Amino acid sequence: MLGQVESGADIAALRRFVGLTQSQFALALGISVPTLQDWEQDRQHPEGPAIALLRIAARHPRIIRENLESAA
Image (tube, rainbow, N blue to C red; front, side):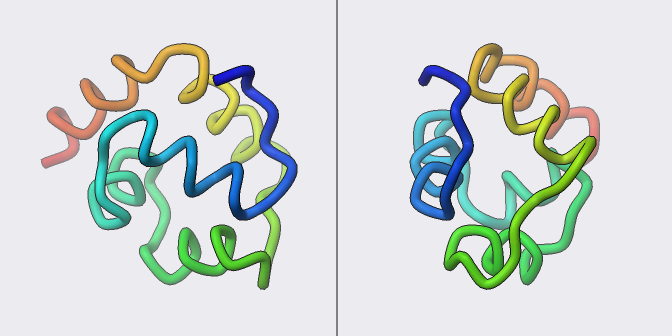
């Protein structure tokens, strides 16, 4: 992953790259599943800190998986 998050397809691809379900990815990012679904389906777009967090997820997927473990 290059860290480019320009569309819902990019977000869905990132989630699959990290290896998490929608529920797991949403929990790891601290967002709701409906918000993630809106992003993935291009109904809404992440802004500000959410974009930064998605870029970190793309570059360091292990950190997102570790965050999921501590959030559960």
